[in-house]
Length: 481
Ligand code: SIN
Image 1 (cartoon, helix red, strand yellow):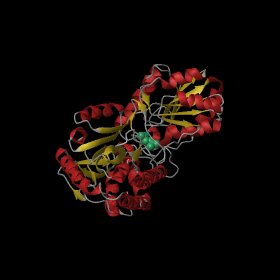
Image 2: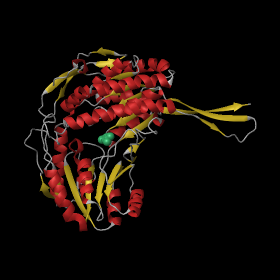
Image 3: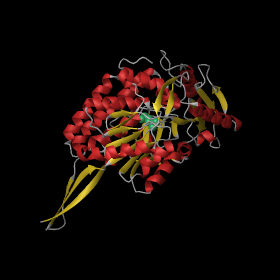
């Protein structure tokens, strides 16, 4: 990995704008070839407590800085990230595996949250509430909640960090970040640029760690931490929620998904193929909003499947740094094992392989772009996130069947559907029990819109004008006159 700015490659932990090292280290691998990229310091409980203390101290001054000044610093951070797009993308592809073009897209997407929330920082308004009394007046103000802990996943090692950190910092909170152990390097590079942008000491602290359970416990139970923001599995989210309950912390949870992509008989086939492909195979199928189930109405099934199979077969598998590659490796051996387990279970229960269906020749962690048909609700992949490049296809007959099938899950993050009848589009969008709906479109994430699920996909909205709410308290003042 050859970075133009070698200072972006860090291996320590970051507290108070200083780099520290621990005796204990852990390797960060390139999932495309298994090479060790670097050994990183393994921050533990003591370091987590020091980071919280630094964030607590920094909150005193950062929280009272005028929003305009915080915004100016965040804008500088945004510019530095954009300026270093090529290096950050290379770092991202090297530790996470996604194709370089997708990684560049993620750098821009990640930076866009910083720009957006720098702008939103100046619009955190309170209210004047009409009083029913002659001798009392009511106002509300919004204030930063305090020290925030952010626990982020490996599938978007930049954007899932900035989507949490930017609103927190913008409104005056300070942050301790624990990035995923598979992908700490992007987080550390963001810290380098945050410091360069002028974010003061203690405002943003980063703890790479292999001790996820122990460090996670500090970040969810420490009495100083006022808010926990987590993106990851529903299973881990439940544990963190229990831990955070002990000190009644504010929380946002962006958890698992089980997105249906529904192709109705009146769909524009070209749009349905493009949208389903984009949603399913982005990041080799490793996003929480990836189409997990492709539901196709019987009458359009032959035409859709012919075009879809052709498009999936054209996806090139390989190391993300190589030209034209569209499908990189999965993140680690557990991810490959999971895809193989779900495939085997589906095949045992009657599914048929239309395309792919096995590990790819490109290396240990690669899986072929796959389509399986004859899927049913009894199969494990109907209830679990596949998190791999596998389209599980189901046939349905009526609109009611499709809605019933789509909603038959504990998850409620994203759903997609393809149709042209406008009245039907409204009705279906209203009936789908999901927080995000893509209609004739497979790419739905932007800084300007609210990202977040319902049911066991969690709660809280990231991005958009709502994204600051989770980092604010509303204070009501009653003034006697
Ligand atoms: C995720 O997989 O959780 C994030 C995907 C996105 O932001 O589009």
